[in-house]
Image 1 (cartoon, rainbow, N blue to C red):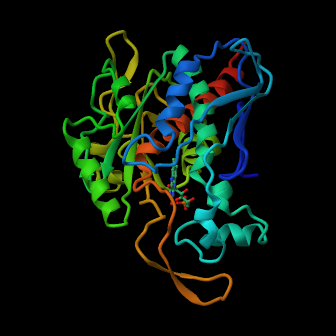
Image 2 (image 1 turned 90 degrees about the vertical axis):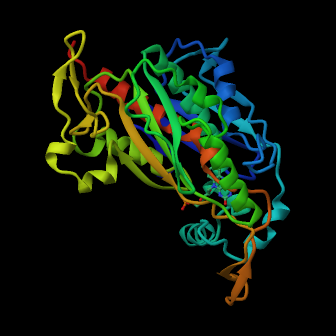
Length: 365
Ligand SMILES: Cc1cc2nc3c(=O)[nH]c(=O)nc-3n(C[C@H](O)[C@H](O)[C@H](O)COP(=O)(O)O)c2cc1C
């Protein structure tokens, strides 16, 4: 089932782009957590469209509403259902999509998969809109993890050929919180302006650009995860690949490991300041054998350029079964990456909370 995920924390996602609401059910979320509504709204606002010239001018307020599992702002431990009602809908913009298949969208695959009964309006269940409840769920998990001393940070490590400094080598005490307040979160001063210019250039030409989001998680204990199917990499990749537009996920030095020797790629063990076991380097990204080793977790997601572009593209008409030309109309992000930042952080939080709960459940009494 594609809309249910989880081992110890079950996440059910529902809604369509042009439906009355999108939402999420969290089953297994612990009782007794006082929800920081301001922090939750802040995460939702980072994803919401219409925030800058870099995103679609669609206005969606993304107001969270809890239907169950919360009493007086505190989680009850029962299934937590939260919805975000839809405000901005312009189905007319998508009239053409009923006929002409939008290249690199799910119009064709969704049509085949659901025997023609799919809700195609605005991308239906394949829309980036479904990431709003993911951010909501992730914000709750993030609050839970933060109380355990776990911090999640992310930056745009690459965009339109521009590369940021690595987040991996920075000291654990670095304050990464400012990144969340940037439209284009980067570490190197001046780089976000260059990236913004590259996105606006593409937009002017009726085109779009892609990029990479790199995540660093500090404060994780050693011992989360398992070998094989529920390895930390398997769990997180499963979640991260489900984000629309993600075309690659790697951990630690990722694909660069292919060009290294063992002597370069291995992370030698050592003793830290308090006698704890650490590694001198972190090429593996904090995971050995599918289990966290206590070092920062490092991962990177590759986003494709936004598929909806104003430039004319070749396609096929489902109505006439002839080849045709399509210039996608409507309001679209010229780059998915800025709005996807909180989504990637949210998916990371959901996966880590699931692994945290799974580990807690198998502890010896
Ligand atoms: C937050 C977010 C916003 C997105 N906004 C758009 C958009 O405005 N226009 C568009 O064509 N695709 C957008 N996408 C990407 C498409 O939904 C996605 O590329 C498409 O459904 C096909 O899926 P795939 O790229 O994973 O194969 C967005 C994705 C995310 C995560």
